[in-house]
Structures are given as C-alpha cells and as structure tokens.
Length: 495
Image (cartoon, rainbow, N blue to C red; front, side, top):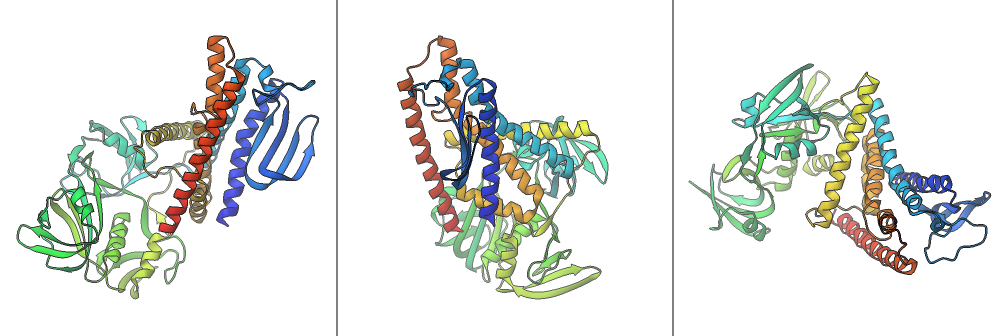
C-alpha cells in the first residue's frame, strides 16, 4: 500500500506544480499542447481545442508541454509559442510552477493547523545541575516561544539554543504560561558506547580506551575490536559494537519529549492504552528511557551500555538477556510478563506504536490559526533552504531522499495517521517548489535566470546555446537522480 499512497501523492504534487505553469501560460496566451499525468504511452486522452489532456502508463509525475518550449524549435503557423512572448511573461510562467507548489504547502498547513493544531515542543527530562535545571525548567513543560519567536519543532529550538545567547522562554505548565530566563552553557561532547562480552565494572571517569585518548576518531577505529576502557580505579574489557559521538555544543541540558510510555495501538501482547512501567527494573517515563532500553537490548546479555559527557560517565547499565521481564499497567491493574527482547526491539522500531508525549496546540481564533500556519511554513522554508545549501556545501550527509526513500517515508507516515501524511505531503511539495527555483539548467530556476538575463541585457541568449545548456543540465540531473535512487536502495538493504 505504501507504493500506492506514494504514487497518488506524487501525482497530486506534480499536477499542482504543472497546473501553475498551465494557468500562467494560458493567461499570457501561450498554447499548451499537452497536460499529462504520468509518462510514456497514453492510457486515456481527451482533446480540448488546443490542449490534449492525457493519463499515461507510468504513473510517476507528469508534465505540461508548451508550444515552442524548445528555444530552437521553429514556430508553426497559428500556434502561439512560449518564446514568442516577452521575457518577463516567460519568467512568470516558469516561476508559476514552484509558486503553486509552495502555495499548496501553505494551504495544506492551514488545513492541518485548523483540524489538528501544531505540534508542541515538550521537555522529557531535565539534567541536574544544568542551566535548564537552575532556571527552573521541568519535565512536561511545553515550549511556546523563545525570545518572542514561535517554535514548532525541536530543530528550531536546538538551533536557537546552540547560538549560546541568553534566552527568554515562554512555556506552558499545567495550563499556565510562564516566562523563564536561561543562558545556554557549552557542554562537553557526549560519548555513547555499546560493549558486548564484557568483564569488569563501569567506573565514574574514563581515562583512556585501550591506552588511547577518549576521542571519537580513536573509538571509531576500534569498532568491533576487543578494547579495554580504563577508569580511575578499575578497567572494563569487551568488544566495542556501537559508538556514537555528539560534538560539544551550547545547550540548556534537557531532552525533548517525543513519545510517551503509553501504547496507542495493539502490538504483540501489548494492548492500546497499556502503560509501560519498567523493563528488567529500568523505569520508563519518557522517550529517553525508551531509547536507553533499545541500546540495552543491543548490548545483550553480558554487555553494557555507557553514556559519558566528556570523560564523566553519566549513565550506564548492563545489557538485557534474551528473555526480559516487562512491567505493564493496564487499567487499574499492574502485572509483569516475560517476553523476548527481540519483540521489544521490534516494537521500538515500529512507527506510531506509542502515544505522543504532548497534545497539539489548537487555536479557536481563526486569524491566529492562519498566522501560526503561515509562520510554521515560513520556518520550514528557511530550514529547507539551509538544508539545500548544506547539500551543495557537502555539510548535509545523507539528507537527500529519492523516490524509493519517499515510499518508505509515506508508509511510515500512513501508520501514524492522516495528520502525519498531510504534513509529509506539504513538506514534499514545498521542497519540490524550492528545489525547482535553484538557478540550475533544466530546472525552472535555470530558465528564470535566462529570462532575467534577457531582461537586463535587452537581448535574447542564442537559442542553440540555451538549449544545449538545458540539455546538459537535464543529463546531470538524471545522473543525480540515479545516484540518489541507488543510495535509497543501499539504505533499504542496510535495514
């Protein structure tokens, strides 16, 4: 079903984009020869006066074929071609596709906010002796704005905090709004280690790893090797199976809340509404605890999971055996059951299993609702723009997702619910609009650049030169899409 959902969504998104080109072409009197959904041989066709409306065999995407779209094409008698129009009109025709894509995202977000509100940014856990703890932030606080700026996602909050500047945070706590002042502090880098087949105990301060300094490059080079973790008073030995490192950063010292410990649907022996109390004695109250449970399952019997801030161990626990004791609260009853650790791991890897931690924020005032929807879109556009720049600067690794990757994302969103699906659709259509505005040959942005040059220079670029540049751009774009598709296949195989 994920493939079917993806095809329907993609057809809708591309149709809206091409409809923008179609409408503006007709406004300026340019003949539209074809408006097609899909590619390849036709399945269905209906002819208008000058436009053929088609549904083609390959239901992925679509296109609008404008008369004279090829700048080297000869103009036929009785047909009004694209390049017979002034440069400023052609610019608006090229710009209309991305514009409609972005506007579709804004319209979808108005619908989403009207029906479901906006996601709340909630706090799951506050670290002791941190700036957040000292300022008075607490678990379950909902962050509404920072320094007067509305926030709707953890990415935006993180980016603001990492600037290291003093903050005035508007929060909601038990239905009341409070303003809290806090200043981020530069935190040490965090190390996350999973070791198996261990001997010895975990200490409080890590001195070295197999006699080498505690550095990310060192630990990455020791993956899947037998290592010794030297503490002040003892040594822990084992096979280093997993390692992750978070760079030093300005932070307040709290974890974001994503999901709760309450099941939102039946899965395995767990029923909708069940509250997960503990696993093997490890108490579960937030997504932070669920994340640690996952790592303890990965460590396995005889293994250990360690979290360290700099060289100081902040949290550690021995790995779980194959059969684990799970404590559940069902209604007014508490009981324990023994299940396979692989089952719990499968549950944790499944999308939409647990209820969200905090409810969406809804608005009764229509003006405020529309303002918030537009403001959220504005924030997303800025984030997308920075991500695109990051890709071209090679600072965003693995951030590009192709068709196969989108199939997976659509499938995961469908499991969560309609709100998530519409949010993903809005994100995709806005991304397509923004991507097409890039000043690259073969894209709408590249054609806009040629129109601007003609307006500024008051002279049309040689059609053969322009056509050749767009052809080369199209070939490069196809190679890029093939590369992204192979990357998607690699990710699927890795899973």
